[in-house]
Amino acid sequence: MKVPTKIRAWLAERYDVGCVEQFADDQAHKPLPPTVGFWHTFGSLSLYLFLNQVVTGILLMVYYRPTTNTAFESVRFIMTKAHFGWLIRGLHAWGATLMILCVLIHMIRTFFMGAYKKPRELTWVLGVFIFGCTVTFGFTGYLLPWNQLSYWATTVGTEITGAIPVAGQYLKVLLRGGEGVTGETLARFYVLHVVVLPWVLTMLIATHLFLMRVQGLATFERVGEEKPIDKSRGIPFFPHHVLKEGVVFCALIGILVTLIVLFPVELGEKADPFVTPEGIKPEWYFLPTYQLLKYFPKTLGLFVSLIPQLLLLLWAFLDRSPERHPRKRPIAVSIGIAALLLAIAFGLLGHFSERDVTFRGRPYHVDIYGVPHALPVKSPP
Amino acid sequence: MKDGQKISRRSFLDWLLGGGLILWGAGFLAPVLSYVWPAQSRGPSVQTVSAGKADEFAEWQTKIVAIGGHPVIVVRTPQGFRAFSAICTHLGCIVGWDASRHQIACPCHAGFFDINGRPVAGPPPQPLAEHGVAVVNGEVLVKSA
Image (cartoon, rainbow over all chains, first blue to last red; front, side, top):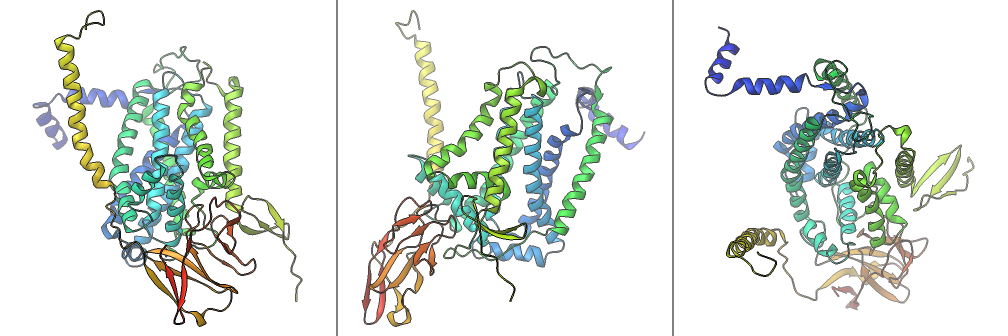
């Protein structure tokens, strides 16, 4: 008898192995709707990237020291002394960016394909929480290298919390561990980043996946008219869809390594609480909110920036039309496209604001609100 | 409960048990919440810090000094020394001096304050808090409040 067979026989004498095998077989050969294509792989890509974050995060923790005197130096050590430290940090930093991108694309796909509709509203809500949790991961992890950029981005980011009426100041102090961004803040963000958020996200993802598996993937059929997918018209999860995911997984690894090599993650200067550098900008996924906050007073700006997030959370309950196909949902699709265009526009304004740019050979200064002002052209000496 | 008039012994015990469980949970939660609330120590309410010798400051020259861990910007104007909290009232960045405009400027969101600490441009909602300054024996002394 071969070793695996022996192990199976040993387990079968003690546990109901057949039941587990049947479950695994059912899951592996579950037919998926014929509409499932490459766009459906972004959910799995997000999961791969989360696993990448867990593994590289554990490796970074081996050398990282979360105090104001050692955080920056320990990251520098990882980047310059530890073998392949640059690669591990690159995988973690670029992995975070790509994870947020993949979760976003996954949400956009779900929105436009109407997959959030009954009976999958809770899966959508969990997805919104997963997105929020991923962005919070980005925000807390950003401070950990304790460089100028991360210090001031955190100062501005946590200051916004203080604008919440009544509880704002308490929340700010709780988040920072005091009045200012100090070593206490670093310790709190570290605990959130490496202990609290990973467990919260793991549980959210597990429930999200469980619901997705139990209810199956959505088709373009109207709400209440979905027919069960039988094996004759469905795509088998294994090997068809798994192979498709294998292809995108390999592409993802290629993109990740290319980004790490061509655009290495910088460390910058150590945080100085007494000097704010010029033109400090948050990460790309916060740029639309950052720009939006400039047009409104602090408290009003906070509420305005909360509206899209609330809409996102409640969208599955607000959109009551039974249609799923994008061509049959012109209003929802128009709102989605408008929201996307607005986010991109605000992001671009945020990126170019407070910078000097050259457009068609003419220099311009883009002001705080994103309005370009022509600069005098310097004549050659 | 029958006809909404009487509370049965069973439902009374249910309420008691439910309330007890909530209190029991709160008993666990209270120390955790008070643990994560930062333990803040308060130092002396008024501190005086030297910003250096008065003759080291040229007219309109500025310097950032730390008072009790908080940055304060000291400016020498033609009328004398002024000192303001260097934390922008908008989103907490550290302000600096804009020599061309003769104004205090925030590098984060282009907020500007005049020489009295009042916001004159950009998003800052409130003026910068002023600190008392005295020149004693040629030394610029800045008070914490």
